[in-house]
Amino acid sequence: MVAQRLDGKACALEVENGLHARIEQCKLRGVMPHLAVVIVGDDPASHVYVGSKVRACERLGIQSTHIELPSNASEDEVRSAIESLNSQEGLHGILVQSPLPPHMDEESLTDLIHPSKDVDGFHPQNLGRLVQGRMDGMLPCTPSGVMRMLEWAGVETSGKTAVILGRSRIVGMPQALLLGVKGVDATVTVAHSRTRNTTELCASADIVIAAVGRPEMVREDWIKPGAVVVDVGINRVDDSSRERGWRLAGDVHPDVANVASWLSPVPGGVGPMTIAMLMENTVRATELSISDTLDS
Ligand code: GUN
Image (tube, rainbow, N blue to C red; front, side):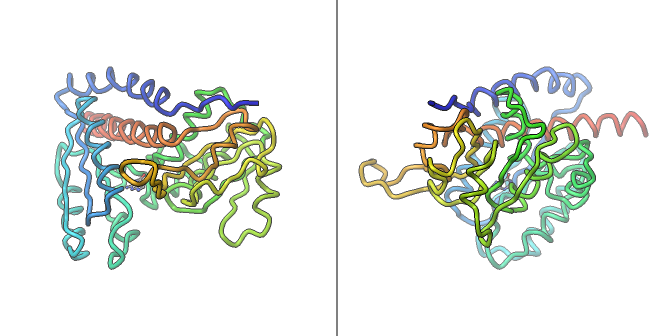
């Protein structure tokens, strides 16, 4: 078997195409969707991601504000940047790029973002709604992008077993909730660094989502023939055969394509979907702010 490509780039283009008319509607009401992206420090990968987010805004006609703070900025400076963005009228989405420098408490800072502007879906109010099985809050972008890709490919989830590798706040935990919710109906196992039988769990799963940040950890013999495999990992690995000396690798070894029915590539898989879902959340936050204004 050669796996079909879970083509995040193509799926993201469909999501973006669906946003054009909604953005036009906002503009007809005199409101331009507006996203603020805050980045602290000089982590090269984070700067690449933020650049992609800002370019997606340009592509779609969404206004973006890019705030850069140095790695020695204080937590108070980040706090006051967030507070000022919270109170800025005509600004609909705020994203603080993760990871923040180690001297900062990332959770307490992202908790400050007003839930209606929390386009990352990390605020306890938005995550809490998801725990309740309510899909009407802001949903975290990477896991909701994975769900959209599975739908795009027509992958059946009901009654299937799904193993998620990794229990992060950004991907693993919300992914488990989205796969297990009523209507999606997968039976979900979250495996992590202390799980004893990870390979056996994977080998019996219909769907495997890898989000651990370990290059090519998931091997061909971990995967049941015909399983669907989604690779959330983006790792830089040394490669002297490349001019730049490195290449990108996912958490899944490319040989998994020999056994899986669907496999998402890296790059071109989950990455573009995360950005597309961020754009969708920003448009949604804008639409909700317009209907709040009409209601009041
Ligand atoms: N870092 C890696 N993924 C993400 C994401 O989805 N949102 C934010 N804010 N930071 C990230």
